[in-house]
Length: 195
Image (cartoon, rainbow, N blue to C red):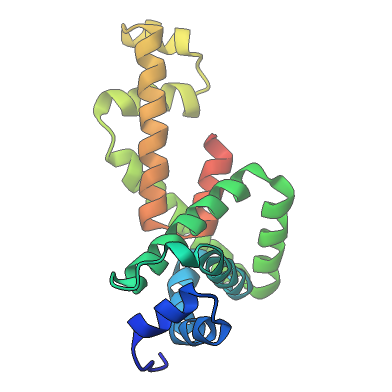
């Protein structure tokens, strides 16, 4: 990372609209932020786009930045939130997801695609193992065996509302687990499959 004279001073100047101060912040934080985002998405062009989006957001909200607080922590929080929004967007937008997969397949060998698939399977198994026994049973019946909530309720001897609640909580737990432990492609695959 590039060394700056006084980050606090540069942030004050940036708040006032000084573009050279913004450029200093950008050059200083860009390499580390790029590596951080690349860990999530594994696609260099997407990581670069995400970095630019994050810095655009910083410029737009520069007047709200408190130079006396940790700017790095603030920046990485913005980046993390942006990655999570991108994952949701990928899950909802079939065309965007297809473009990302096409980019990935252009760059990756069959071996790497297999690794991604194995990573998804591993993360899903870990997340599934973290569910309570009752939630595992509900998830297995409804998602893996295709039973309706009413059928699962009858099999398990619980109410339909209990089955629905277990499904919602199970899916939320699995999704959160994948977000915390996987990358953007694995998470978008999971969200697209279940939500």
